[in-house]
Length: 87
Image 1 (cartoon, one colour):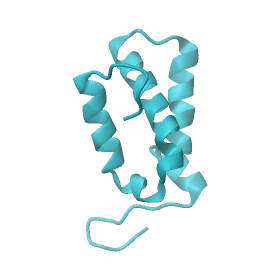
Image 2 (cartoon, rainbow, N blue to C red):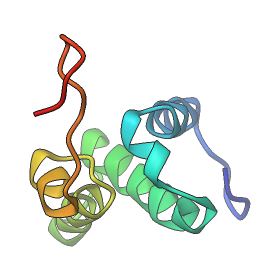
Image 3 (cartoon, rainbow, N blue to C red):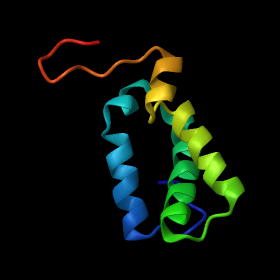
Image 4 (tube, rainbow, N blue to C red):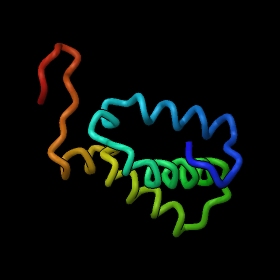
């Protein structure tokens, strides 16, 4: 995780979950700042501390990172189906 701030255990867990998600196979180190910003906004939204702007930024980052169905579609990504094929 990038330096410059203290990361909570919840943020560290989310960071690990994101970087082990299937979408992360398409990210390189240039995605670190975007993923870090997503983690910050996500935890603020869940804790109720986020402004409407921060919630909107989380949504946009999620789409740009391919973490939402809309984002995956716009990037042309498809996750494998449980049977092993892709949709």
